[in-house]
Picture 1 (tube, each protein chain N blue to C red):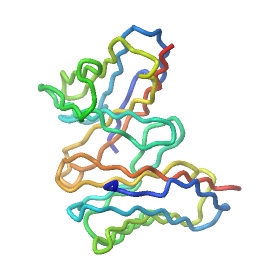
Picture 2 (tube, chains in turn red, green; picture 1 turned 45 degrees about the vertical axis):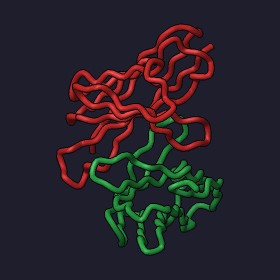
Picture 3 (cartoon, rainbow over the protein chains, first blue to last red; picture 1 turned 90 degrees about the vertical axis):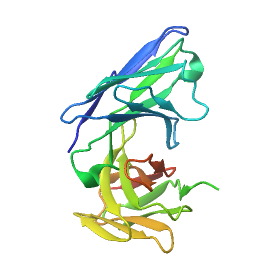
Picture 4 (cartoon, chains in turn red, brown; picture 1 turned 30 degrees about the vertical axis):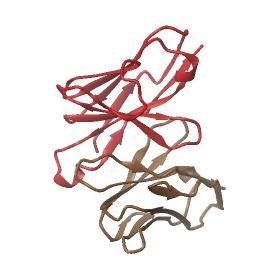
Amino acid sequence: GAVVSQHPSRVICKSGTSVKIECRSLDFQATTMFWYRQFPKQSLMLMATSNEGSKATYEQGVEKDKFLINHASLTLSTLTVTSAHPEDSSFYICSARDFRLPMAKNIQYFGAGTRLSVL
Amino acid sequence: QKEVEQDPGPLSVPEGAIVSLNCTYSNSAFQYFMWYRQYSRKGPELLMYTYSSGNKEDGRFTAQVDKSSKYISLFIRDSQPSDSATYLCAMTYNQGGKLIFGQGTELSVKP
């Protein structure tokens, strides 16, 4: 199956600093990647859809200047949490779609997630 | 009303039991249905993918979709402690569209 790698798995930072999270599709090209946020015992909340070579599409209520997304290549998307504050502490997960198989267009393969703690 | 409703549990069963996990949805346009398993502090992994109504079996797992009732199920036979995780249903109505997730059901299988 398709493999998505997410790095780092855990990050602790001071308030006011910026944190970059990487999401890579290892064995396929992903023209579209997704970024989610998940609070404890809650479902995934879609933050934005990242399209290779174009601007990301953000969900309502998500600050695009706060959560910068770059999808510069077909295998890499990055999420930068700028000027992080304690309320940004959460579990961030990326996913990617593999368009090689027609019926697989709707399947998203997820990374292992990044646990961000802002002190 | 949420588009997708899923009982959050927690659900606790003894090893070897048959587990039934369910989701209901309100949008009749949904056509593609998935079940993901998520272990604690990990990303979700795909378990089952079905299109439209019907059943699909993969080992100990069976996914059912009843579009007339707007109801999907995941059955786990001979449940094992390693099945202890949160199970998320997800669905979408168009090719390549956003996934709409249920809240997730936390399952615990006791040895």
